[in-house]
Structure formats: structure tokens, C-alpha cells
Image 1: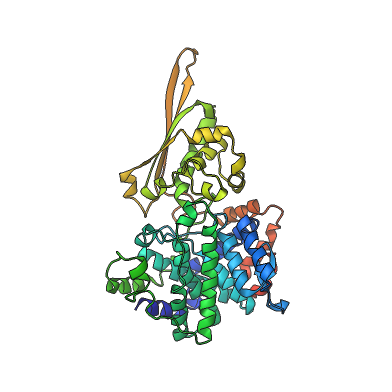
Image 2: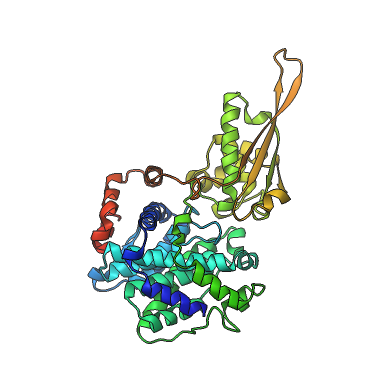
Length: 462
């Protein structure tokens, strides 16, 4: 049974059995999470959930039991992991896994962090739980996607809840039966629709917080003897049947999950440069290369005649030419490329300033044609390819003839993937760029986090 196989993996995972490369990647992902969440806490969605939780006053009377709510202060266990999850996903700058098609960190880390801080666990215990949660969420994603995603489900939430429950179960030291119950309870709360992102709403942010919150609730209930369905994944009316109905035979999946567990897929988690959907990043990388050449050739934006983007199906579907909110801009390939070609990059401030985007950028976005390229589509999901071609006009030396030229750049995988990773120094720079004024030296404490209390550690991040 798939659910019980996951539970066995969770309870049998120990820090001594986790390879060094997985632990180092976990610490890098945690560093990235902290930087992204601190900056994300200033977003409207994070402030709204903080204000809501404050208004119903769920914070504990015993301040020694408060947990860190990044960017806001302290709060209760459950609202803390909910708010931290929303903050982590609010900028669309959080980590992800290409094949699993989900963002594991924004649900797994808030769940593990909340319980580890509440129970004053060590950094070693936190990392152990974090790796367990990433592995469960990613393995499930590899197993069910792209079928599950193509039905409109947001795997960050629907599968992230299992990862959050796994991490929470590990922190709480649940036994096998309790862990099975926690996974079962998590599965029955699995939710999240991609329409929330496509429509340009903040619902996508809620998905991450909900998954973290539900994972913690599931583990806490299981600890108290609350039972959950042990067949939540493979049952006749379970997750696979209801949310992945065209998936292959369950018997094959049991063998598949067993072989996938323990490969420490956290090693393949990507980190992000741009605060937009990952499917846009290859095109933006290509556009940045073209921008540099245009600058060298002293070509201005008004000389661009047209732009052609050829890419894979999922990326090509992000064709909103008229986004009106920061959330919808994060799903807009045309405007993301136009901003990049005008300024050479795409940052958080560019997205937030959507109401102030210049007519020049808007006009350039209308010159972009997006095409599905079948050859590039066949490379997906192992690659996320995009080919961008910019055609521009230039008057010849004599000044009497207008010539047309093109620059084309192809990106098979955006920067940040395991095949083309960011360095630790680049992630630290990202942290500081997002949180100007923060004393970056405080992050040095993460180098020795295994031996420190999480409660002590988190005192450095508020």
C-alpha cells in the first residue's frame, strides 16, 4: 500500500542515513525560504492573513510557546505555520521540483519549523523532518504528474499537504500507526486548484499555508488517537481515483513509490531568480541574453519590430497580454518578456509596480507572438525549453536604407536547476537583495544549525 510505504519511510529515516549532499541542499533551501518569506511577509496576502489571525486572537497566553511568524513577530502554532506558508509562496520566488511539478518548501518548511520551534527541537531534528517532508511530496509528485496537474490541481497544495504531514509526524516522533493516520487525515484535506493562479488571485498563496496548516493539524490529531484512512491514496475512492483518474495501475504505483523513496530528491530542487511562474523562466533567461546584445548594438526598444517565442505547451498557455494585478503578472509570459527586454531583468519591484508599467513596455508586449513548438514540447518535463527571437530594424550606415536583423536565443533549462545551480553566495545575495538592511552576517549561524535549538536559531530572524 502506498500510504503505508510512505509511513515506513518516514519513521525509518534518521539523520545519520541522510547523505551530506541532501543535508547541505536542505540548508540552502532553508536559507532561501527565510529570505523569500521575510520579503513575502510584506505582501498584501501575508498582511491580510496576519491581521485576520490577530483579530481572532489565537496566539498562546504563554509567550514561551509562541513561534516565529516571519516578518510579523510571534504567534500561535497553527496560525504561525499558516502565515509562514503564505509568506513563502506570496512572491512566487520559492523553491520547486521540475519533474514533481510542485513547490515543496512553502508547505513542508513552515510545518516542520512551527513544531520544531514549539517543542524546542534541535536543528538536526528539524533537518531530518524537512528532508522527510520534501521526499514524500516530491515522490508523490513524480508519481502522479503531469496527469494530476493537467486536471487543474495545484500540486504545491494537494501534494504539499502530505509532505507537511510527513515533516510534522517526524518532529512529533509519531509511531507507524500514527504516521499512517496523519497521512490519511492530510489526504482528506488535499485541495488547491490552478485556476487560483491563472485568475490572478491570492488563492494560490493560500494553498501553501493551507497545506502546511493541514499537515500540522493532521499530525497533532493523529498523536491524540484521531484516525485517518490508511488507503487515502490508493483506495477505490481515494486520491488517485478521484484526482488522477487516468493514472496507471495501482500495483505499478506501489512498486514505483518504493523505488523512488530514499533517493533524496531534494538534490534536484530548483531555486528561483524571478518572482514569476517557473514556466516563464527559460523565456526570461533568453530575453536577458538578447537584452545584453541589443545594448551592445545600441538598439533601443522602439526599433524592435516583432518578437517570437516558441516554447512547450504549459509555458505557451501563460499568454495573458493584459494582466492587471501582481498575481496575474506572475502568470504572464508576454509582459514578463517585455519588462525584461526593456530593463534587462525582472524583479519583485517590477511585479509590484504593475499599475505603473510604462506604455512602452505595454506596447512591446503586444509585439510578442507565442507559439507552441512540438519539438520543444517533447523535451518536457526533463527540459523546460524556450526559443526567443527578436527582430529589429536598423538604418544602414548611409542612412538611406532600413535593414532588418534578428537575434535568437534558446534556453533549455533556466538557471537554478540542479544541472545549472545557484551557488550559496548567489542565494545569500538574493536574501540580501530581497531584504535590504538585514545584517547578512546573522545567516552564518545556519552553518552550525544541527547543534542548535530551533527556538534559539529563529531568534535571529525576526
